[in-house]
Length: 297
Image (tube, rainbow, N blue to C red):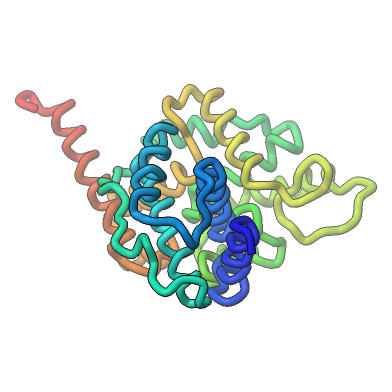
């Protein structure tokens, strides 16, 4: 079996046996294509891969200008790949079992100010179907802390406007119920009445909540592009993504005195340590305010 076939079998194993999400398998696939490209360039098979090749591979990654976080993920991917080959009896031991990626710090997430959020939410033109859709998506992400993947997979039946809740299927297929603020529900209702029907004209019915101009479920790439566009229109600096609004949702809740466990539940974090990073954001914001406004700051 050649290298590409082994890589495909590994990805199939992740998808069917380990039951990883489609997005996670896609990330593994991207890393495996990069690794297979390196092996082809070196004329090396997985069976003959050893420590000298690993060192050359790490140099190959650094020369490509990849971030420490990307290199660390790539190393983790090939460790998993070689563990799979050992389990399948292709290899007796893994040549990369001791390999570790570069140590990386945990960066503080980008959190918008209240003013920046208001400018961003007001940027889409609500006189057009696209503007109504985009504003509804922005409002929902900020109101409920949704991930990009959760926004694009929302269906109409997941929204209960009367109760003010969304039913979300998050990472690992775990479901959670999150509250939605009234302004977001009102914007969503306008989109459902005036925007969404315009995308469905002459096309088959679908229960997907947010649609493209062709009447199909909107993609994550489109969501990222639209948010970037409205951030520029609103004059919000920096690289703004769906996660920027999710981070702002959590940071603003905690700054307002919300309980950490409640925020963890709303974000869908399995481990509270993941949520605790937002307490650091709040502390940094307090220090910034102190420096700016205190006479001896």
